[in-house]
Image (cartoon, rainbow, N blue to C red):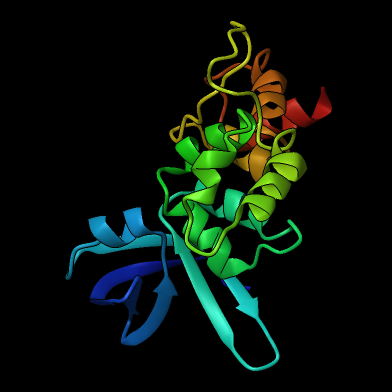
Length: 189
């Protein structure tokens, strides 16, 4: 599996970018926000999801690991394929989409191209408990927004922890430890 691609934006077209990696161009379908911020000639790193079907193979790219993980959760919902998941992620930042799902905001999710009310409701029902706490939930020890500078938090989320569970697991672990040690300590608890 291709986990990430690091290179230079060679071309942009129709919601896709081509990233040149040492002379090889990888076409990535990206959310609208990533497409709009990508500049030709810019050095970039995209976390990728390789989707293989009988007739084709597609690469989906995300500027953050949190967006990739949310994409992977979205495609587990019955009736939501990669294109619909990408449309949902194009509605805003990964945190805005995560928060809308956590808050049960069906109207927000139905704004995505190709996602009807029933599909949006299914997304909310299936994922609301998996994406973490809504941002309006006030509890001092639980983080509700993703700190993209905390690699240990992202590593725990990559292992399947929700944002709330990952935050709770790391709350008693010394933040000055190296990332690998913090993750190990959090897993022991």
